[in-house]
Image (spheres, rainbow, N blue to C red):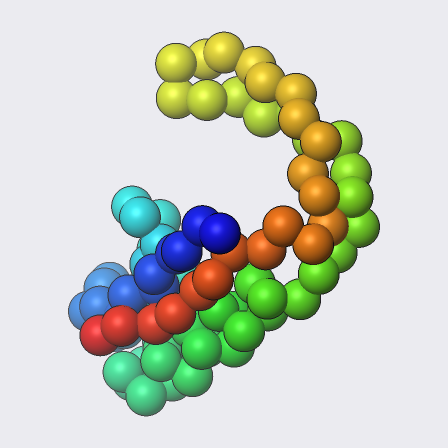
Length: 79
């Protein structure tokens, strides 16, 4: 199982959560950002439908995969 970590950080004059190099919208307080991050992390555990996906990687190469609806990451929040 993949493990992902959302991190709450100061950003753009307020607070945000981030995953890797991607930031959420800004929140006025650390508490608000932490609440939103915990909600998003909890949503990662909800199973979905098995579906065909296509995506382009950072090198510009396209990939096709079958995403299993029950193959969900283990997500947590730090910060």
